[in-house]
Image (cartoon, rainbow, N blue to C red; front, side, top):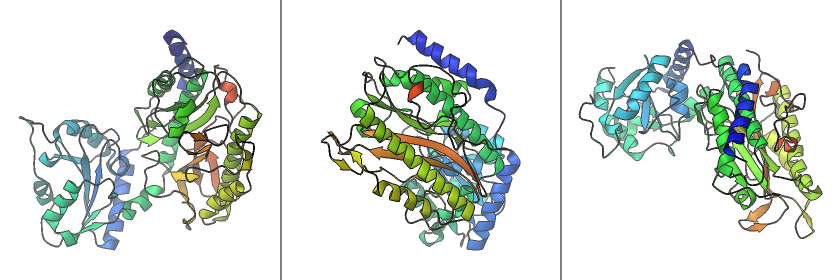
Length: 455
């Protein structure tokens, strides 16, 4: 497929969706103020004087939710929230200019720290202060101040932990990520509405990618169509690198697109996660390029569709009856225990799932740190949350050794929950093979669990 054709397909999809995207939806300043107060109230209960979260281009969720830092660049950064007053973004010189824009939106302050600059750079005209200076201005440079680190230790650089301990003392620096995770797990109406726009963009991007998934095209060309559509419709960045894995590259499960050329008859797994005004959408599907799946391949793909239905029905039941969330996990695994599919050697056996069926999402695609549904999660689902259903089956147990006629098949969508109401954001149907290599509209062929969230 020539470049001109790729551009034509992408523009056709953009024109189809552009009028349906509300780009004005974003988190207002007053909501940030409400968030700070909720966190500060929780801090007061636990005896914390200062909350500290860190971030980078990889782990954005905590600082994004707390201070609207949606688009960090280059350096690592942090946000501190005192028991009373506004947060302060701690940034390096280069990324600090970007974060000043975020600060104007959310109403927080910014302090440029030399500790956060790129290590071997020199900034002749930058006006740095020390963390001690920022703390002194807020009356926090005194003995007995209890600091809670609310970011996960897997994200926290040792240098930042040592910096806090050197200032406040080792015993006064407490690691407690749950204090923030439990609060940001519950979503406001505007958060759910913003995520709805993100998922409209996700559907559009995947629809364009399906249209150009034909033999002879590279994975990166397919991804380029999705990326073009996402940015054209208002998504500034993505929750993960756009996924296109074809043929044996499906052993990677979630691999980013490469220069590999898609061959006729190969399966391709496609996935996008657009970030719209700080919040994420997601959609993933697996299809066959150039020819429809055969009967045994269809059975494998249909099993993933059936698993999706079992899990979503369990979600609906759990929401309606306020059941422990691991009920959902149990239902999905019970279905798999009774599933037998034909292997390449003619025997029948159960395929394996690669990961849990439900995870939390918001200011990240899956790194919220709380809310995934596993066999151990006994709490009910949150009252008002946004989650992803991510069901998949592996057709192999070891790399290079296929067991089933499909190496990997996935269906991932985002859905909202408000009280006992459940609705999948995405409109794309579970089986999207019919949209491969063409731009025909979805029309009434939509996801059976799709339901618009009404603001």
